Length: 446
Image 1 (cartoon, rainbow, N blue to C red):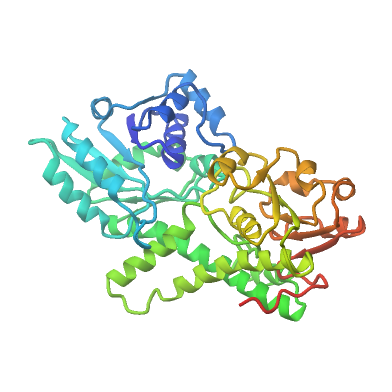
Image 2: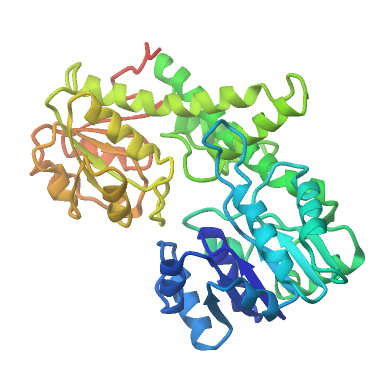
């Protein structure tokens, strides 16, 4: 099939390449000329495992190309995926739908043949009603344009895997014709056994925010338990393993640490709560601000640990930060807990040096006041405390003795509970983590 993808940010670019990978002819469209130039030359404008290889392979085979022209996209296909951003509003917690509405106003009048628009952007339930109204107002006379919704469930750092082997495909449709179109698009994946759920559009709109809100709640719950562990000497890693063995709960996404960030979970729980307030659903979603608060407390607790390990004050302390991206295998720093901790330490007078495997350029552009180094030992040289804040595999493979040779004091706080504690302690380090019995309490954080 010939398919256009409108919006080639993180979601749109990976989705477009994935559609090409399963055999479709794809045209990606974006108004950002630099982004389109990079994608057209086979250079990914962001880092995501295996994405650039997939992009180059499909461009070479003629299955994907890119444009800045809405007219070209409209003429190219009669199936169009809408993948524009829906960030958190600057005025509050609701989703900012201006880009999505703008695309409909600009793109729909250019469509000259019966077409299917498929929304993939994360939106509040009920957004499709507004989109249909805009289609009705701006569509060309005699051209039938149908709307469907097909939410994405990509995890950054694993987006290519999630595109090619998703847990499920959700099709929110209003007709059998739209359902058949979506089945045809995803037929190669369906034949491999990927579940295909057909529902109405309202359900499809809601499912992404509901999924992310549940995952955020699950993470915040185990992080709340980690605070109890800090008070009592219980071990949150063992606790999560034991509780997670209950199949009704599960161990996946049930790990205490520095908490979640990025461009999805924080904005989605806030947008769902905002929708609940606007829709007058009473107290049904009142737990979501608490989920958000628990998550943000993890950052405060990590700064408090760094302060305590430096003798009660960070003023003048040399702090080595391992990690800037909000997750490993990505260079995305949006709402990064790691950078939030680094910035908070610097605000208390610490001399902060930051390392990351992939995100140094983005981090240094976003927060130029911190110091950055592309060598781990360079970051750690003379450090009074080392903070492990993004769980890259490379950090797990560090030699504690080698790091010990360059630091001023052998103190490390593992905010991701991912490093081999025994190896570090055997090398003479004071090693602590979130919610783990380590000889130091994080009690008393307000």
